[in-house]
Image 1 (spheres, rainbow over the protein chains, first blue to last red):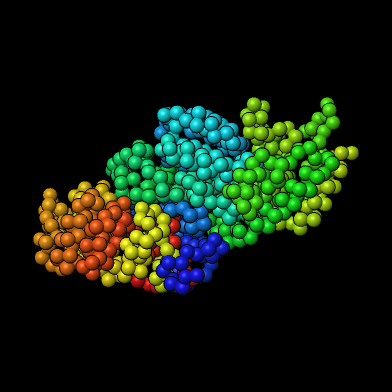
Image 2 (spheres, rainbow over the protein chains, first blue to last red):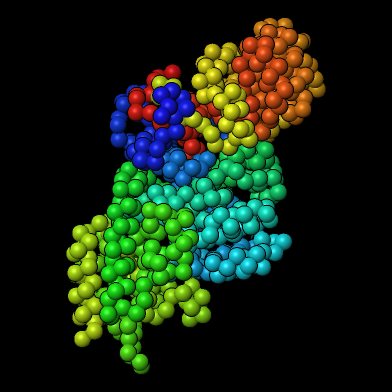
Length: 435
Length: 178
């Protein structure tokens, strides 16, 4: 153990509660103050002009930056091992800001087919309006990734833990493929959080999160964040390296080095789309971060107990949780998520031949007493949903099949309740649906 | 949200140096002392173009109260400061020599910095020249490689944090008024 204070690398839990916030010199307030203000007074006209030209660090307007939001951003960067972060209004906004910052019309994305349904619709339908075509690949098949890359491909995209079948992204291999082609790998790590896996450690360039889920952790707050490893050479990316007409032909990569992507994302994309996080939401997300590893460890332990229970239950056809040896990605989960592959997984109820499996799923969900039926994950309360009729219902049958979402699939997000109570609830609902 | 009482984690992000070289040439204690004690900074390769990185850095440091002396043989005046063709031509003492020239030129600049009795030699981000570093270090100068003076100032004086960047400063003590 080092005793010198200038070379200590503090641990994860210390960063959860301290990173990004030094008590201020005037008040010494210990909790992070909420700067609920739209705008910030300039020192003088010269300073104002310099702030607008990005020549000074400072706050102008909360759509671009805010001192409360900055604490959330730096804390996330510290936890992910990133060079910095930009917070956004939601996870969908974080993803969109990342693509709009990185890509130009005509650029292509290669993405895992096992993504959150909302991500798939954003990639397929919204990005198409910007002429940003996407090719989907089986995330577990490295040959498919490689074959889908064309000279126009400018980003690879996947989820650490795929939604909803729990496929584990082989980050190291896909990052190596991306690096060999000079393309950044973007990882949505919402389901893992940095408490379980830090994609940058395995070579990911950019990480995005829906902070709404486990980071906030209490089902109170929408938010997102994008993070940059600071290790990618953007000199061949015109969007980051070429002169910016919005800033008198400023060359962001020349001027800001490893901060260039984040500066662009903040000063151009978030500024122009308005997809910023509110300071109050930033405060709530910070409160969530302060207990992140404790919640993730307990919820992941409980998820494994629930998954084992379901796998052994007579009314259950299958369970897809990478923490179980029966999951095809169990070995990858052990490598990338040694504390367990998160607290969200799916399973299917057994049905007799010719029986309507959707009706059984509906009856099961309606019989549950402790699991809340809603469209979210990562709450301290346990949650349940039937994706084929909710989160994924806008996908075609073919898209559903490619994403591994069958009509029988039920997704659980395990919370902090007493695990015996959760098992009781599932057991009684499985019994009710079988009658 | 200013700096704590000079306590920071090891800043190992975004460095081309080995761990051993980081200890020698990116020492947070040395960097903080330089930022605190330096008054006069000669910027070798300061551009006349206000959209260049060197201009951003020089302008920032001038705003923070440092005396900036531009070294650029192709200009007479930059940011209202008289410009000199070389370090040797500067008629006053220089505390810190900040280099914005290609790394290969740093060896000769290091010799000049030693000759004019500068107290420190600093090569900007992505500039690594171990020979130059050793020349300066042997003559007793403090040396920093592959770091940006503006970013480091922003890191320790709370400004970089405002942009959501990872300063690696972790401290539970009350920040000090500057």
